[in-house]
Amino acid sequence: MLNWLRRPKYESVERRDIPAGLWAKCPRCGQLVYRKELERNLKVCPKCGYHHRLSGPERLRLLVDEGTFEEWDAELASVDPLGFPEYADRYRHAVQRTGRREAVLTGRGRIEGVEAAVAVLDFAFLGGSMGSVVGEKVARTFERAVELRLPVVTCSASGGARMQEGVLSLMQLAKTVAAVGRLHTAGLPFVSVLCDPTTGGVTASFAMLGDVHVAEPGALIGFAGARVIEQTIRQKLPEGFQTAEFLLRRGLVDLIVPRSELKSTLARLLRLMGAGGEVAVDHRA
Amino acid sequence: MTTAPDRGEQERELQQLEEQLAQLQAAGSDVPDLETRLQALRERVQALREALWRQPTPWQVVQAARHPQRPKLGDYLQRLFTDVVELHGDRLFGDDPAMFCGLARLDGQAVVVVGHHKGKDTRENVHRRWGMPNPEGYRKAARVLRLADKLGLPAVTLVDTPAAYPGVEAEERGQAEAIARSILTLAQLRSPVVVAITGEGGSGGALAIGVGDRVLMMQYAIYSVIPPEGCAAILWRDAARKEEAASALKLTAQDLLELGVVDEVVPEPLGGAHLDPERAAQFLREALVRHLREVQALPPEERLQRRYDKYRRMGRFTAHPEDLLAGGR
Image 1 (cartoon, rainbow over the protein chains, first blue to last red):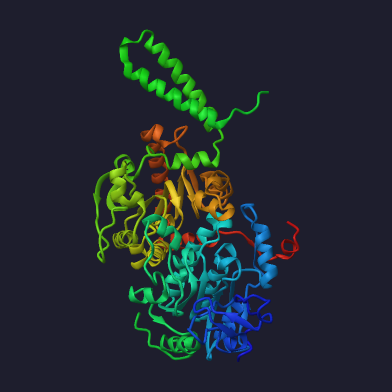
Image 2 (tube, rainbow over the protein chains, first blue to last red; image 1 turned 90 degrees about the vertical axis):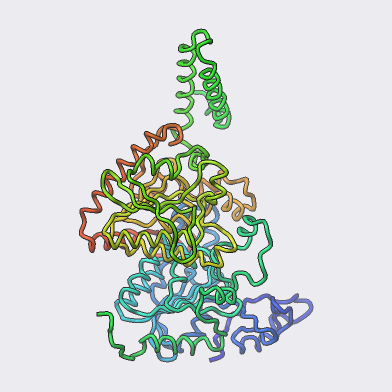
């Protein structure tokens, strides 16, 4: 299906030069790309291969077989537990802009026929930051996967823990990691897909605890922000630092998979890891 | 009623009085009426300290938590434990001086101790990276915690770090993975785990060794998802508004007790543990021993379930967002 892109949000060029919305400028190579062509190409720049960011719903349409997704916990929404400056307004604004209540979409669906529990973070919603709701929904995803004996696929795109919920956000690292632990104990597979960008508290929790780590080409993946590191070491960072390719060389991700092959790769991995009806002998007993 | 005295002025006055007191003590017995004058100064210092610390501002607490003389891991090792044997290295890459791991006795009982290792002076802090671990620090912690599990020893962790070290090599060696794996190790450890936040609880770098059956927090320690300076820089593009940010972040022990993140606030001597490290250590020892005894009494399966539930409950959200989204709040 190619109509999975209904609300393109990438940078447009100046409106007075070109009719609105017809063309998009690639942030990497600077070339103008006909928007429809970009969409047909799964939002990958046909000139340089740059992988534009996808929203949560776009990511789901890319990976989950049409008509098979059953969303979980869509009603969960954030409160403002600390009465933090500007949080309520920013949150409401994000809800209005995206039409969703939080920075993660969770549920079950089929990936080329293989049933899986899926959690997709949405960078467009407050930078994909993990507060109480994101932590809760991710934890529930792993817990339901254990109940239903399903593998888990997460797609991360996040700036980290949500500052506006203070230490409660930090505690979501512990909550989600504990839930991942239950999945591991239950012997069920977990594939973590790392998209651009995945940093901070999300990398330091469930996203780095997959059995297999898959990254999109060029994705920024790391713990500390580049600016914080530069301030600490008082040096410019090396070219390509914290990219998917850098992590592959350092042994932190297993595969870099272009978007056009992501779905089939995930399905193959899940089948190899025992999901999708193949019966494995339990050697652990 | 007089107007509230200015805190900054009070702090300066307290500092001056403390200096006078020190000078007077140094001058020794040549001073006429030494004892009387000393006594008068001490009383004024005490009164001022009480006025300043009856209801400290969050920023005051931040300063206490970061006070250069605040007791560090080394002080607590000495005062809380006996038979301390440090264990070195993660068996994978190297040994991280920013993370202490070892075996020791607490109240006579053998335990595993893990803690951020801040130094006492600049030289030691350069060596120990101000207690900011690299991945090998967290991997050493996870290794030694697994040893606790194997031997059935309880684990005590002492948290005091500004952050996990933000460096190029830390990223190359998988800082995020090391932190996540350390959290997982603690979440699944069959042994009892009691955590004490003694100074700075700096985000993921602190939480990595901060998951346990009980989490204690010293009265003037802080625990935050981001330093107040960084928060102010993001919110208002002005790091100087750190005092406001410190209030907004709810990072004091009392705040976190109310949010259900910590189980008990361990009292400190008025004005901070550095003013009487021995008494501070006594309070901490009492609390650690008591909580350890309580969680040790539980069967391992129940303890694990309770630990899981404890973190599972953390966070606040609504399943009825209609009012909220309509703008009612």
